[in-house]
Image (cartoon, rainbow, N blue to C red):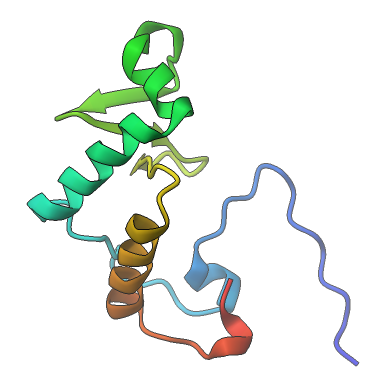
Length: 111
């Protein structure tokens, strides 16, 4: 039997590597220089009511920043992350990129 681990507090924002107990290496990022990916994200914003509201009234959404027509938010760790609209094909594309960047840790460790 494994010892009980202390649950994460709401202040914790672990990376996948931290959650899996892997030593941290250099930051791994998706390629936001990919024009097709960025265009897909931008198109997705127009179909997502939440992001339409941010784009229409950015001064009412101070936790978000718009740069090059992409919406970003600061993570709990203080890292600026791109916001991804709810679009199945877009999310699949991003997960595929993440799989190639990070690797696959087995079906039991998919988060």
